[in-house]
Amino acid sequence: QVQLVESGGGLVQAGGSLRLSCAASGSILIDAMGWSRQAPGKQRVLVAAITRGGSTNYAESVKGRFTISRDNAKNTVYLQMNSLKPEDTAVYYCNVRTAYGSAYWGQGTQVTVSS
Image (cartoon, rainbow, N blue to C red; front, top):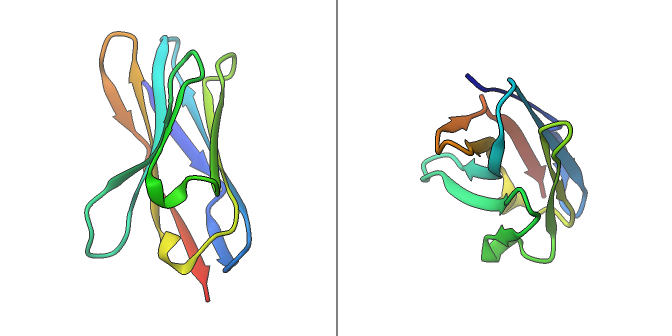
C-alpha cells in the first residue's frame, strides 16, 4: 500500500510561483510519478510526469513554466510552477505508478491564481 501526502498549494497572484511536493510512503519501488489537475467543471488532465530515470513529459499549456522533478531516495516528486496564470487554477493531484503497475492518487491540493 502506498500513501501520498501533498503540500504546497495555495493562493498566488498571476505571475507568481508555487512549488508542490508529494511524498510517497511505503517500502515499494515507485516507477513513474506525476501531477494532474482538475478545474471546476472540467476533466482531470495530466500536467507533468517523470519516470524513475528522469524522463519528463509536460502538457503543452505548462511547457516552459512548470518543472517536474523527483528525489528517488525520498520517493518525493515536486512541481515548480512559475509564471502562473488564472487558468492554472485547479485542484492538483499527485499520482504514482509502482514497478508492479499499481496506481495511486493523492488527496489533492488547491491552487488558486488571482488576476
